[in-house]
Length: 151
Image (tube, rainbow, N blue to C red):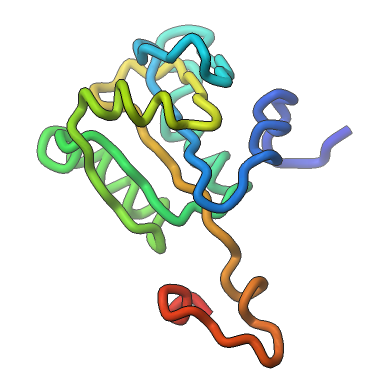
């Protein structure tokens, strides 16, 4: 039996497939998931599980280099935006028009995880990164400039 972390077999397995620059979407209950997407549906009931719980658990298992959310989030849902910045302090944050999050980003995602969240603009994209000290910390390795601050 697995000792800790995400116990949901399909989600745990999907996270293990992610590599550098892959996009994982964690979305609310009403998100229009493309038919062709690798969909992992965790929704049981309203806010069960909630968005922050799922994002927090995923953050413990995946290195997140970038966070993308709808351009409405910083101004119309500042509490969510503040939480995201606190949970992913080393990530680069970007915004996209809400329609693009629902369309283009959803189609680009390697995995889409549906939560039970009833939360406006509760659709967050996580771009996977690398553990910079492990990858570039070896003797004789010249660290790329974009990773130097992470070593």
